Length: 115
Ligand code: SF4
Ligand code: SF4
Image 1 (spheres, rainbow, N blue to C red):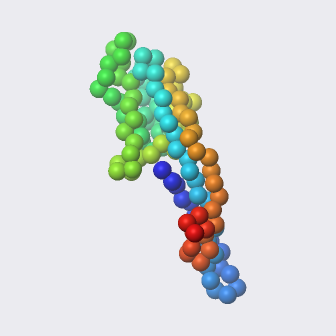
Image 2: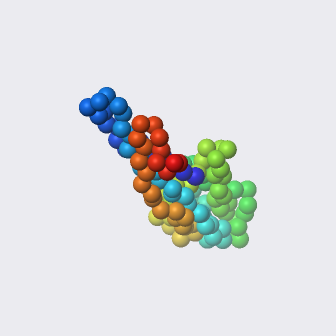
Image 3: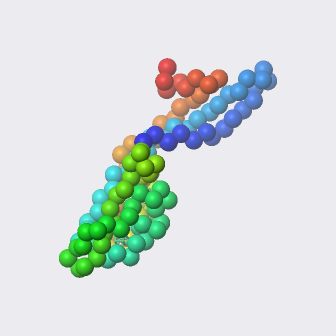
């Protein structure tokens, strides 16, 4: 998933708009060790993109581990923020960042990355 943030909009002396964009190719690959989970729900509650939910599965301790519900069609995409990983007291979830940030420039409505 590609996230585009408009960082700055400048009005040139000529009156034409110069747009500067930061184009972020940041995507997380979520790993869950279901047997470690104790269903505290911290990862679910703290995920800013709401890509985690409690699953119907039951692990060996009787808990429901989280599952990933992301997808462009659902408007939910992991952005590799790492909140879930830091929050989990059982070290049961971690995220790999798949792509790094690129910088793009858009001038007069034309995106330099698409030329
Ligand atoms: S890394 Fe961030 S966006 Fe991805 S699942 Fe964890 S909390 Fe949610
Ligand atoms: S934070 Fe860890 S222990 Fe808590 S629900 Fe998520 S995976 Fe399970």
